[in-house]
Image (cartoon, rainbow, N blue to C red; front, side, top):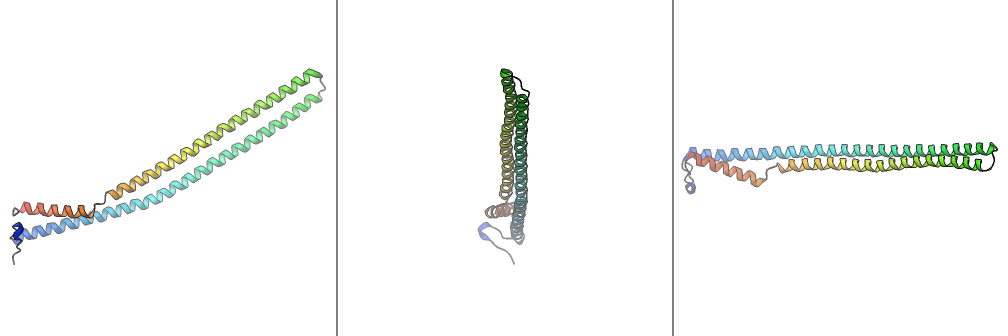
Length: 187
């Protein structure tokens, strides 16, 4: 039996078999590549979900650590100020109890209060600096998290963009078939 396709001038069994075989092979290869790309994209997506959860956990732990550090700094600072206030009161009472007269006692008390105020201001400045650093740490952690998330999204998009479309597979199949037909020389 002879395969005859007069519209394209194909009249031999060999040429027809090569043409149909080429079409079948190109279609099978195209669909296999499409399937493999879909599987790879789905694996990339699943890996990204796991990596995103890890990034969220890491962010949460960092934020908790920064909050705890800030809280400890505030507590320590408050305790230092309280201690300095007690020391100031004790020193002031000692000055009053020394029974010195007039201006000298006033000057000594003022000096003692100035020293205590300078210490409190130093602690407050250190505390304010720690608060600003906390804010920068939070912003840095958020930026790091968003960078990781954006990279994961980019990886997912790249993986899904590698999947050939059905039209692309069919066009490649037709092109391969026509190339085979042209190389046989009956076209």
